[in-house]
Image (cartoon, rainbow, N blue to C red; front, top):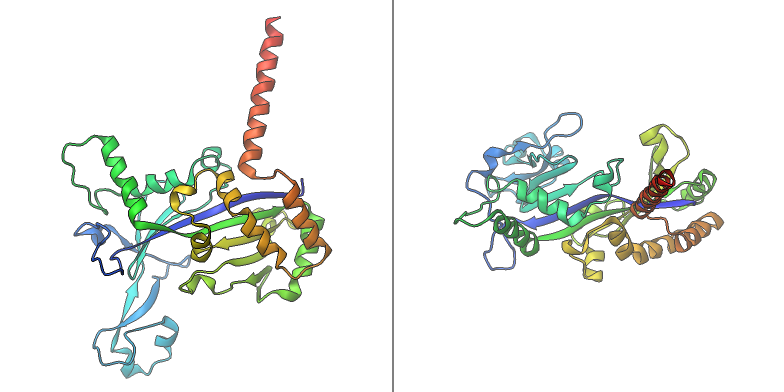
Length: 317
């Protein structure tokens, strides 16, 4: 097996106030901000995502941090910073953040060594995260209903208010020689390069309103495990693809289901890569092999259980 298909991140988004003129809002509690903290970078710096014109006299209502830094000192006094906020969750590797009119729930480390996490439903985890912050952050009027009714209320909030925002679809190239050749072939076609990462497509796609697809390749082993030469092709799908395929959050259940729903789109992205023989070989491997990580783990577990049952039968004879 030359390749392994896996996911790593799923993120969903809701409007705090809908922009369709309905006036409908995500039912945040009155004091929800009191239960949040300012989001910070890895270096501990508070995240400022834009600056707001508090006076109404400046040309732009909102400007980027980069543009703010270039303003004359007297103009800077017209603006105040807009901070990204975080809501703490009690579920590992899950994050909630808010900025502007957006409310995000993000799942990370979906294909970690935690087998329970690897084999779980992504949709159900999103539901569990949202349910865990009620009624402190998102309101719930308990009128004597059961816990099942409470959970169903959270499920309805997900279905009515949240949309898929990002899904990270990864191709881990287990054949190191193949991975190195693919990386070398793609060097001449990348949009940007940062250290050992080639940004092939969509370098700034995340910031665009329509949410395009990003593709990059890097030495996953060197970055995460110290095992140099284990390359990963990372495809991040966003809103444009989800709309095209008619996918919603409830469609994103088990890992193999998610990957199969998006596999054709992943193949299209690989077909667009300006590579050579190694890229063609990679595409052939992906078409031929049953190489989804969760399915592979399930099969191994089933085989182990069968072997154990056979050993027990032998002992009984």
